[in-house]
Image 1 (tube, rainbow, N blue to C red):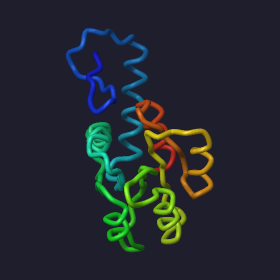
Image 2: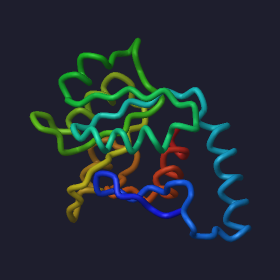
Image 3: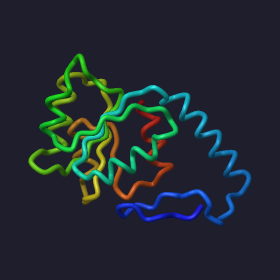
Image 4: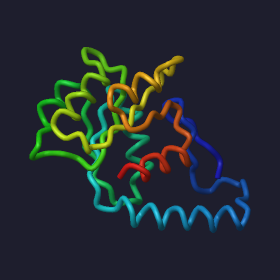
Amino acid sequence: MLPAKVANYAIPIPGGKKKIPKFDRWRQLYRDKRMTEKISNKRIFVVDDDLPSFQLIEEIFYSYKVTLEYFASGEEFLQTISRDNLPDLVIMDIQLPGADGLELTKEVKKIDPSVPVIAYTSYAMAGDKERCIKAGCSAYVSKPIDLDKFLDTVSGYI
C-alpha cells in the first residue's frame, strides 16, 4: 500500500505496490481481529475543531463498527455530555478555539472519573503530555497519528 496525503496525515490506500511481509500481514490480521472484538459497538466522542482530523479518525475506525460522535467545539460537547449520555472514550483536542481541552477533560471527570480521555493535538510542546495527564487525561497522542500506536492506545482504555 502506498500512502496518500490527507490533511497532512499519511494513510494507506489499496492498490499500492509495496509488499507486506507475510508475518506482518498475519500480525496485522490478528491485531484487527483482537481490536474488533474489543472495541466493536463502543461509543467514542471526538472533540476537535479540525474536520479533516475527525475524518481521519472516522476512516481509522470504519471497519471496527464503532459509533463516533463529532463535536467541533467545546460548547457543543458540554451541551451533550451528561451522566445519562456518556461515551466509552473521549478523544480530545487540547487546542480548541474558545475552549481549553484540558478544562473540558476536567468537566468530563467531574461527571464520571472512569471515562477515559485521550488528549490529541498537533501542537505538541515540551511538557504537554505531563500537563494532560495531570488534568485527568488517560493518555496523550500527538498528530500526525502513528496508526499502530494510536490503535494500541485506544484499545488500552476502551
